[in-house]
Length: 265
Ligand SMILES: Nc1ncnc2c1ncn2[C@@H]1O[C@H](COP(=O)(O)OP(=O)(O)OP(=O)(O)O)[C@@H](O)[C@H]1O
Ligand SMILES: [Mg+2]
Image (cartoon, rainbow, N blue to C red):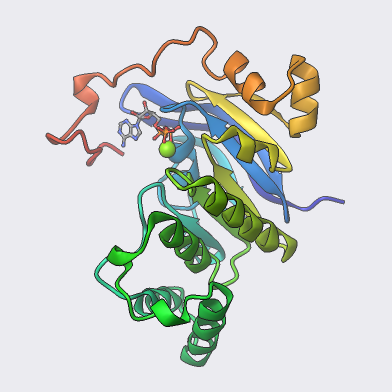
């Protein structure tokens, strides 16, 4: 029997009158690699932040690792790892300092932090760079490190928001080897990506379009259902059916000159 670790029922997230997540319903199972696909602005990051306990749903029921996202977001945070869409490590700290800092944030005992830091530096072959600043690392290495840090405390679930954006194909493949290894340890991986070759590596994928989930299944079944050879073909058929560009948000939804979303949630 598959064990459900994420259960989402009728999830709605509104920003003012705009609906970013429009009645989402899905489940994710333990140890699964679940791909969360959708065009720019489809609502992936919005949902991912709710599932991670970082933002509250407008309505609906979201249970993650046994905890309700509305009532117990702090308990969810303790049981998950999160790698955000923008770079998540501290650029002005060294590799070793970053790893140890996150171990501390996750509340791990000091002896365990020291041991796991050494293990991780070994695993990534990072020992000789351990005292280099993050700012000096190439993007692919930064992303591998950010992922390793997100699972450093062995969470039940790890959420990865476009972890391989801008990363070269060889490093992306190595990154996915790390994802597989993590899933094999029983950690559920919830990942967003715009790379459709990566979607093929997932156990199941969902495809979002304009705030709604329009398809959800294994890559093989989706291809069969849509008469497509690749997930990319399926995606192009349904992710934004009339190929419109992503609509610009109305000025009333923007706050701050840089278009940063501040204080609207
Ligand atoms: N805090 C906010 N206030 C107002 N609107 C927001 C806020 N956050 C996101 N949005 C809007 O919600 C919609 C979904 O955004 P979201 O970031 O979830 O998309 P996404 O699928 O992650 O896109 P991308 O692939 O570009 O990362 C977009 O139209 C975005 O402009
Ligand atoms: Mg996003």
